[in-house]
Amino acid sequence: MKAFATRRAVPVLVAPVLAGLWGAALGWSHLDGGMPLLDRLEATMTDLRTLIRGTTRPPEDVVIVAIDDETVSREGGYPLGRATIGRIVDSITELGPQAVALDLLLLDRGESREDAALAASLSSAPAVIAAAAVFSGGRQWLEGGGLLDEIPEAERFLLPLPAFSEAAAVGMVNVATDRTGAPRFVPLLFRSEGRVEASLPLRVAALAARVDPEIGSDRVVLGQMTIPTDLGYVLPLAFYGPRGTIRTVSAEKILAGEVDPGVVNGRIVVIGATVTGGGDVFPSPFDPVLPGVEVISTAVAHLVSGDGLVRDRRVRLADAGVAVLLPMLLVGLVAWRRSAIGFAAVAGVSLAWAAANVAAFSAGIWLSAAVPIAAALPPVMLFGAMQIWQNRSRAQRFASQSALLQRVHAPGLGRWLATHGDFLLEPMRQDAAVVFIDLSGFTGLSETLGPSATREILNGFHALVDEEVTDCGGIVSSYMGDGSMIVFGLPEPTARDAANAVRCTVGLCRRTRAWLDALPAPTSMRLGFKVGAHYGPIVASRLGGEGRQHIAATGDTVNVASRLMEVAAEHGAELALSDELLQLAKAGDLLGSGLLTGPMEADVRGRSGSLQVWLWRDTAK
Image 1 (cartoon, rainbow, N blue to C red):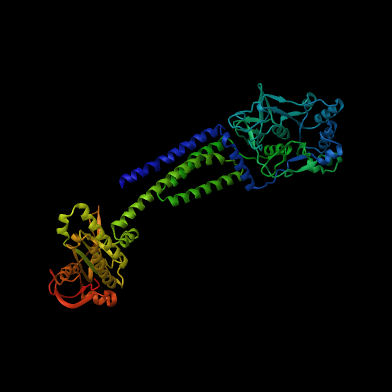
Image 2 (cartoon, one colour):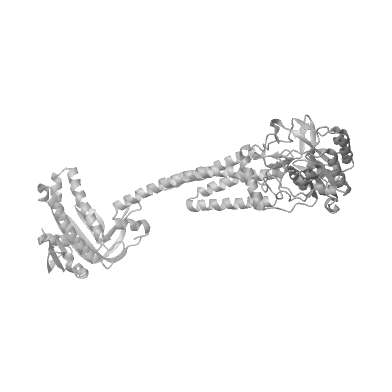
């Protein structure tokens, strides 16, 4: 048992350690953003948590002026002429905005007069205009540890015409998408050939705050506002809802002067296209075609209000810690001795972690879901499968041992011991019927038979005894070579014990006679049998040492039943029954067609006084 406990303790201790090392490897890689294979899982889990959190109220500091279908219809086509864009900027400027962001790329020369008009409009406004960074492969992927490691490095910048860039500040409008195409981050800084540029959201937020941004470790500071950033100074996005959640005004209404000045005054205005077929759209958890201007506006809102998701190095350290502890805890629970409770505890801990993760996300802290899942799931599944296999092997071994126990013990007694392990820990006195049967002449016969023939005869005899006793509801307490001791009343006494014992004695006599007649004549002529049965008090107990015990019935009743076989043999009968047994059994037709004689006074060897005994002979031979 000690060796088994030691063998069990080794995997219980080693498995959590190995699971923790696996989680530590994933956590270390996560700290550097090197987990691109988990990007899709994290994206799915992020969308799910966003939907669970639901829509939120965006800050009122940011307003979108949309170049929408109404505007395009009024102006006669898309893209709008630059003079028209200038009139939109002028109309907004007249309403007193804090800052104006133009989410349109002005890269090519247009008609000189219109370009000049737009440049004049931009110079008279607190404006920031869009530029773009070009990355290898034509698209900026969110590849932790790759392009967004430190500051994203672009091949080149696509800058507005000099006339425009001299009239207004310039900011990059790139967003970082995952493999699904959904924007997850907005990089705040870009570099190319030693030149560093700020993003459009950062430029416009700094312009509105009238401060220059300060770049710290994992953060950007705008005056009194500190914005945590993820690896490479990227800003995580937390979408407020579907398109239109951020206050949106049609550019057509701005041009028509139909907008309440309070909508624009003192606010940051982002001008961008929402026109159908404009192409600048992204999938989001709330909307499959979210306009790009709303993505940029969401980033601006995070910078000015500080309500975005926090995912910085401290959060990643927390992710790494969970990646180590969660698999260790879950594998430890799976390794628990009470495996059913262990698996239930695994489910409970997993649900608790999931609830905590969702709650943190709703509170604005972006803890990774993919890394802990990847850290915990493979070790738990592997060790769980090993546990199931081991449990199945143990169950098969125990079933085999139980089947062996059933064969070694009487069937009823074996089943009883399997469910009543404390049976007869203390001796118990009770009434029972005891039956003995013994083959006559077998000892002399066995001296002339070989081992195989002797075994065959005994095996056949024991089989018929066991079958008859089981059918009558008794148990074979022991086999003594060519004899058997049978008890009716164990493991629990019943009112039918005496009757069942009488019925069994008759059945044993008839079946044994038929079995002897079926043996070869030289063998059957040398064998006979005798049966004795008595009813009275016995002492039932376990006998033996700690290594091996057996159930035994002792007392005067047992001795009398054994001696009654001698009485039967002395009078040429097959069966001798005590008067106590026969009267209690109310034998009646239990004795069948046999000849019952008695009662008679019989002396029992080893017992003072005589005993009333009945003799039975089978007349149906």
